Image (cartoon, rainbow, N blue to C red; front, side):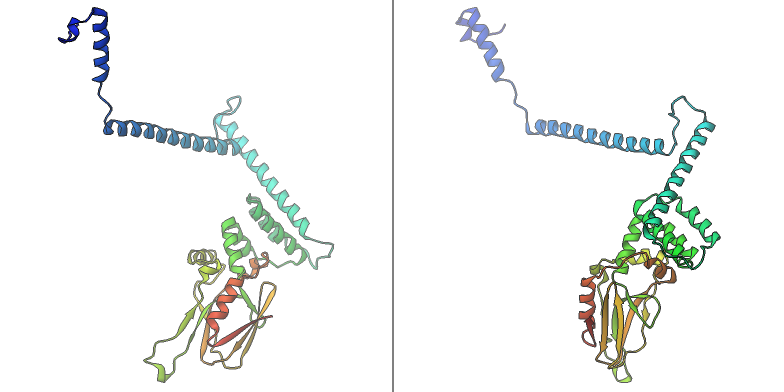
Length: 315
């Protein structure tokens, strides 16, 4: 063991202690980079653990889906491919039967003791059940049950095209349509609901070089964004193009309904035209399923935008 001049004069036992002490002092402290590398390694380890956990969770969910729908080879007793296919078919048929029974129970909850005027078209019923058996969402099953009840009480209430559209709709689509129905006004003198989007003034020969004055309602602030409108267009619930009314005349009064409320429009200036989106035939049919709730935000905007030319009164 190598010792310094000072320690060489010490007894051997003390020399050993001094050397060990000096060795500890000479140990290099970890640098900032070393600490950062250590933290990074721990962080990376946690990240990898999280990814692994997420993968396990996704794998678990997929395994649940496969088991529920009978799409797995890991079946007790190691069934053959043909046997597994037969098992999956039985499970599928059982779920379809369950869907129909739930929808029928929903329909029974809507009807009363009234006697229908006529029988439901058997072809319509066949198509209805063929579509309804694939409806698994509880909110959508309620809508299908309501359709069956209304069709039973009043045959002809819903067309097969309306059923086909409803079958394509998800629960989210139904919520978008609900928002649209909440801002839909109906005129007693005109069939169908209308979502007013604004108005503009017609220009005369003397106004050719003047900027046209138009006023729009911000529908997105009323719960109906532009992507929502596109969804309604794609589902053929709403006509894609804005429609215009005829020119309004001073003193004209228009009576309309929105939800359970009534709205009166009093025209105070001539030369203006209202713009609106109109529900399609299918949209009007399916709107009967949804009890509209009065959207006061829309009505306030509607009244504020039209105020220069039209007074809006709630009744």
